[in-house]
Length: 315
Image 1 (cartoon, rainbow, N blue to C red):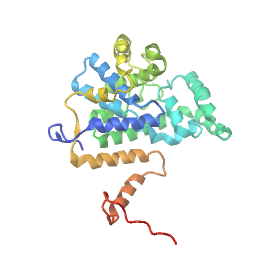
Image 2: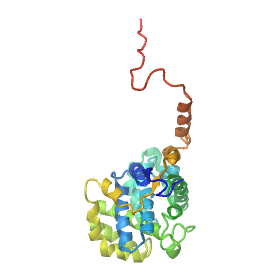
Image 3: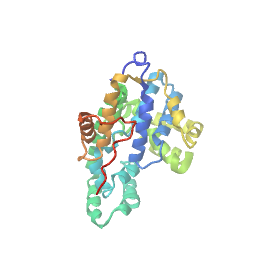
Image 4: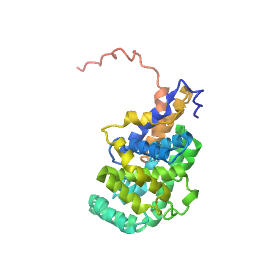
């Protein structure tokens, strides 16, 4: 779907489209705007410090932007865990250590259960009792949706494949069907670590970010990448401290910039419409259907830049 940079030199930058999409994923997780952009800035810097090539850094860049693009693909399971509030569940579970049952219990009691109404307790408790099975299944659904959307949005095959590993752990626990250790996509390992560290840094600064990376090194996180983070975090974290990192995030894309040819913009827009409709089983295909309906209507009998005909006066 994506032309080469030379072929699409007059097209729109893919990064300009996907930075906007990342703001929608921020909203879906109830996190501050530009959180995904901050992940992206840190991930590219950490990859560069690791000595990765520009191609690898480009894949890191786009994986970080798209990391949560399939987040609404498991709304049903997330709603059960959140007592009907899927957004609150995504917010608190996205950076949780799923192999740490005491931590999950703490999140359930302190962050989720307090949002449950009287009618939600039975459903919420049942969801946590079966979380050992439902969580891997729901994240598998998220990964499948993310892979399909990332391909349609113009990501490289490496990024699309890495989306399937996005939530996998270094030690292979919890998500037993996914690769582990060296078989796990390197860019997925890096972006996952950065996302969790950035989330903790937002709440508790560099000390909190370093602490969670240190604690999960060798279990959830690649130990070599964890060591690199701990050695360099104080140098790279200041880059995300400003009120906005929009321009910095656009500038961070490695050359050559990926572009979308004008002929392919319609497919990108259709993919974004499908992304919006994932929120509910009742809205699947809604945006595309609305677009078809609108395109089949006769043109307005007046120019869009002129005033419409006056309304009939009532008697």
